[in-house]
Length: 430
Image (cartoon, rainbow, N blue to C red; front, side, top):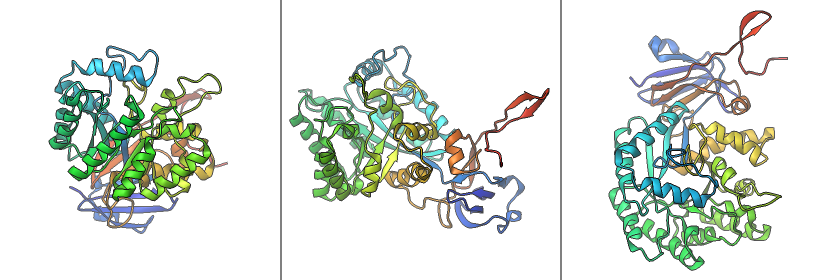
């Protein structure tokens, strides 16, 4: 069945409503008490009791083929990108399709439990072969009824170091059916080759009629300036609105004059940007003494210029970032502190990044909590947008197209005045 009703749901705008879903679509969003829950079977009703409800969450940047490699068998001892690349390549050289699938499946289950029903994953096409591509294409098909999975061809290594097979494999992965053209120009040995790298991926995007989402300028080096090449190329070709620039952490090291010019170019091109606070909080600044930079892109200035800025988890329990459990609220919680977004007026901005911005980057149609939208939603164990971020509240229910697909029950008790007493983390009415 794809019919379901959620009553007494608090939306991000703090309106409390009843949400009716029929045939997998939202048909009614009425003020609480004005819906008709009696029209639904009792097992197709859920009382949110004033808890927050949003459209389903979206993960716009992760690496399913890298996940769960941390400590298995190696750790990243220096915690640098460079060691992550080297060690990850060494482990992946011996991995088969089933190993990739087992790891990716575990992370997808974590994502579902956290209310994520759409995932964009970068997939290595580098020197180890295309087993990861084969594995994730199989998963994409096997779990299509649960998760909408976009796959990005990611070379993870130089395309112009004299080994022509890397570029051949990269293009072959697009022919195999990967959805998006990725890239990593700042890994090239010279600026000239990095520019060529950008031009190559743009040409491939046009050739195969696919969107673009490269890792770009993920470094502390203020001389890494490939984002301007990407923005210029996509602007001139009219494909900026199909292009996402992931990371862009070098922007934190640019002069304000240059950053202003680049942000205007990004806005004019129509490109979107994804920031990945968890990974970049630990990977950037590794070459700094004090004061130590906390590498992330200029979120506030980009948003002020009209650029769509999404937020991704990037690496989860891998050789680049060994922590994580697939919860995007923890990513947002880090950004609250990491980007000085702890003001109350920042709460709507954070939720916009988690929902509308990520949906725009993913290309979701009919997204939101309104009549006609897809009948998918997430119920949180928290009573306001602020409090859900504050506590990183569990998802008590996840509904996809009218079908419940995940639920969480949580209870905590303490001994108080000699008795076991339930405790929640809601702010009391004082």
